[in-house]
Length: 274
Image (tube, rainbow, N blue to C red; front, side, top):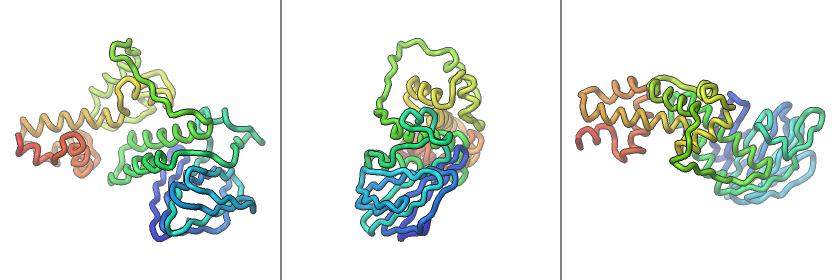
């Protein structure tokens, strides 16, 4: 992509995903991706997209997929914005809404979506760049969130939310995951290891964990770290830097952000207030 007046970029490569946002006037040259699908999602204004010499005047809420080896390009005006999601292979389960051609999934060209929803999701996904060195678990969760959004869009599934009765029996494998997190929350963790303990796929583990706890594994981990940090700030004279690194935060700035989200004050303000 060529740069517009304002362009934000988020690259994630572990599962073959790339995310972009172009705003403030943008145009690129005709090009193809050998093994990438590209989903172009106008979230504000108009987008003039040409694919295989066919013009698509897109507006917010109407997106289009370019399949691998399909020539395409687009242009937006100064008051428009577009989010682009590129993926190498369709997310697990998304073949329900596709036809197979030569072993490759073929989706209908146009897709409807909620511009406000994807804009909000993009801001959340992009927030991992606030950390100098994002944790592996954080990156993996973001990738799975993108894959879940793609799966829902490509299959036409509703964004239903399941709730769990607090008195419901807890799967013993999920209980072992919680025990594992509580015993090792100061060290690095990854979704694959937790999913293995839960005897579930990555995708189903994320769903069942959130249904059980109301949050993601990474946020659950952060909450445990922040809770222990608050205890140390109250009962020890350890420096903020020492507490940050001993509890597994990737940087002091990450510790500050996580702490402020919970207590609405900095660690030092919290210590002085106690």
